[in-house]
Length: 78
Image (cartoon, rainbow, N blue to C red; front, side, top):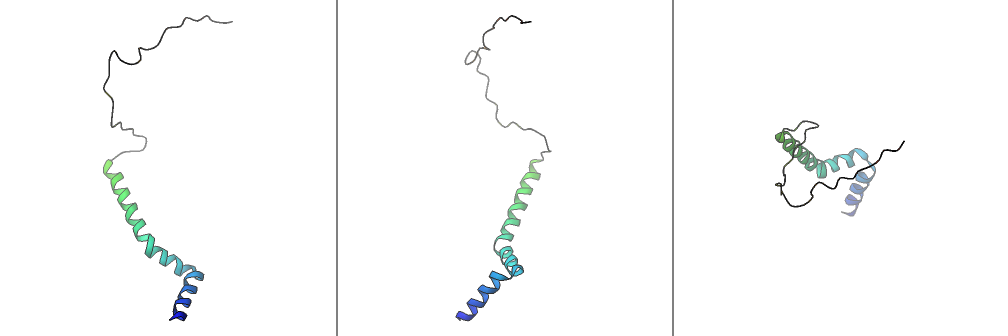
């Protein structure tokens, strides 16, 4: 039994195609599913590159907050 486990370990450790295949079995399938899900949600939103969408705009509170600042007179320098 120990010999079989040891040989399997050596094959996995030192044969790159086997390592890649095992990685694909363990992680790759889940990664592909997540990428498809992300692409599907992106397509459903229908946004194009450079398009901006504002989801929340606060209501204007007139009379509260900033009043636009003070006017400061200045002199031009030559």
